[in-house]
Image (tube, rainbow, N blue to C red; front, side, top):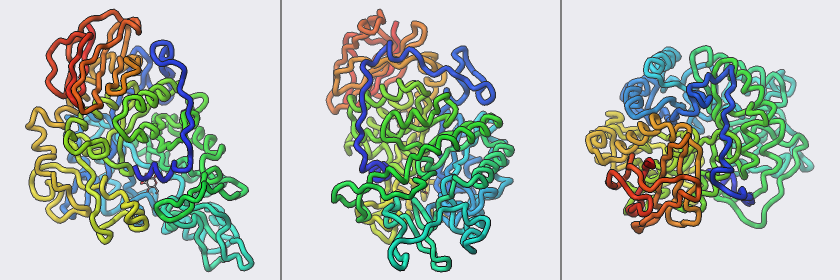
Amino acid sequence: MRKCWLRLAPVVLALVLPAASGWAQNQSPDHRVDPAVNKPVDDEGHAWWQHAVFYEIYPRSFADSNNDGVGDIPGITSKLDYLRWLGVDAIWIAPMFPSPEVDWGYDVSDYYNVNPDYGTLKDMDALVAQGKQRDIRVLLDFVLTYTSDQNKWFQEAMSSRTNPKRDWYIWREGKGAGAEQPPNNWTSNFGGSAWKHDAASGEWYYHYFYPPQPNLNWRNPEVEKNMFDVTRWWYERGIAGFRLDAVDVMFVDSRFQDNPVVGNEKNAFGDPVEHEINDKNQPELHGVLQRLRKVADEHNAVLIGETWTNDIDQLKRYYGKHSDEVTMPMDFMFTMVNKLSPPDFRKQIDWVDGSGGWPVYVLSNHDIQRVYDRYGDGVHNDQIAKLMASLYLTLRGTAVMYYGEEIGMENNDPKRPEDVKDSRGRVGWPKDKGRDGERTPMQWSAEANAGFAVTAPWLPVDERYKTYNVSSEKSDSKSILNYYRQLLTLRHTNKALLDGKYVALNENDSNVLAYARSYKGQNVVVVLNMSGVAQKVKLNLAAKGVEARSAKTLLSSFGAPERVSLNEISVEAFGAWIGETE
Ligand code: GLC
């Protein structure tokens, strides 16, 4: 959760809970379907992505086909059958473009090629084609806010103040008598000033992240044209869409005003904490997103947003007033609920479910500590992994998984500063150890290096791999992997889970999160015991207009009986029960 902490720290989450949850509030799920993009796949008018499960792949760590210790594209292709078996419908691959790797691919030096570490364009074409055969769509990561300083565009921009590409980036004069101070007080998300001095021209350029990641100037129409062309080029190669990286920082205040400083606090990098009102969330952003969406629509593609927001209104804006911006803005406020707290989850789900847009749930990714140890108590982590899976995979909306969550991978954080590969961890050590821990190699088997590679992998494999790996878990009917698989099968086949309204139940319970998914008289009920004590739950369904006394168990994490009385559902500590009313 480090990243969220850093990016949201100064902001008070001053949110107002909608008046009531339940039927009334949830009457109108978003059934709008854009005719160009999204052919409805069911009577409700839902499009493929609304029923799909997305799976994020960190290419360096997923599967290594040539045993060099680094994952690659042919490696991903070789695992498509596994992903189909699991129930994944689309993969989003974190950046696989050529890159000097100062930020592991989020510094792109060429948007029209594949990083040689990962393969070739031909390999990418093969992946798309093989995916198509298995009904798995491929999405890429569009790093559109900044490029690498090694990108030829920036090299040209650097070459002189009058170069035509100079204005593709953000340049300013420094402050002070000799212009020796940065143009304003904005700080980089990775520590220090967000401005770097260019000795040759005497000007400073702006980088919200590392200095080698100069921000593009999206106010220049040529930037927009060229970046949109990048997406067209990939759509024409069969890419089904993009995850849009760091959209909140695409624009900065055109007057370059200082950010207000919040108190005397310092962040992990020793910088003052700022209220980021001038370097984030500028209104022009939404115009670009609308136009980018049009291009996506023309190619039948979808856009997932890395949409960090402070409140539900900001999140709503990303959907667009006419559902015409980001197809799937991920709700990161959900990931900010950092403890097993039914009231906090309930509140967050109510907001998002009632927002009018189609919710997109995510619990972990390459920037966020893994679920296993984030919510785990050190004793019941396996149960808790199943509990959390039962949450984000049964809500109304689209779920985005992160590789390895399905086998209970945990964070394997570096122990010594000299082992850190994420530059952010190098700068932030020891307060911020970086994100290596959530990016370690996928654990495929109990063999050496978890079957990932024969050579030592680029990051160390978690030592629990002998038990927590795909091969061993496949043959254990009680494993986290088999639980995920059953859950995904249920999610894909049960009409109430596909299309049903979200109905909060037992809203005053602080131990158990319970809700129904209700579709034309069919009710699936989900009961999640977030406490370490077994609970007997009486579901108050009548209050929500549902007349039912018993239910048949569809899935439980603890071996619940086939039928249960809704007056008394026994749920083990950290247990999950999913049933259908009769
Ligand atoms: C995005 C990526 C993150 C990266 C950052 C800066 O937030 O998700 O991994 O470090 O951009 O490039």
